[in-house]
Image (cartoon, rainbow, N blue to C red; front, side, top):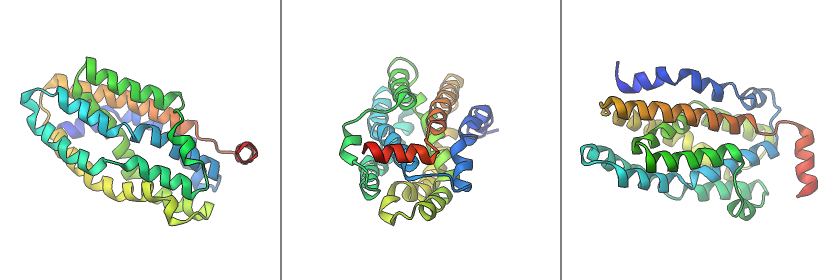
Length: 227
């Protein structure tokens, strides 16, 4: 079994926390509101803006034996740079206050997720970064494009409000194949264990964010009233 296959198997239980988030069923039932989407985008902004800095931190700590991984990170950085601005543009297209999000702070799950990744890269194994990739890009491939289409139909928002989700549904298919090949080159058992553990942690915290997405009309009305 390749390491990528092992990673999929060893994180299946943790991945279930993401895949059972109420928001996934709510979209199918038409119970997803503009406030729900704006909350998701705002939390996405707070982790996406750290993607490139986290990759840089990872690359800086990799030993010489992992030079092929560092090379892969260089390519990955070029693909990911600036995507947080797409999210702010989507928020603005929804009529939300994008600048308030830019200068705001994430809710606890994303705050803990980002803090954990910086810490484990700095004080543990820098390859732990790739546990986050397993979670975010894997979830994007499975969910982003089909859910984006459903959400857009329900909310009646323009294409300009979906640049982040639509682009990542297609972009991450290629990214995930690149990731699979990169992971299959990881042969050290300690490196593999670090990636598996990181993925489990990130599945938990990212799943907690998805579970927290507001899904009631009352919540949306309250958001409009306080806007």
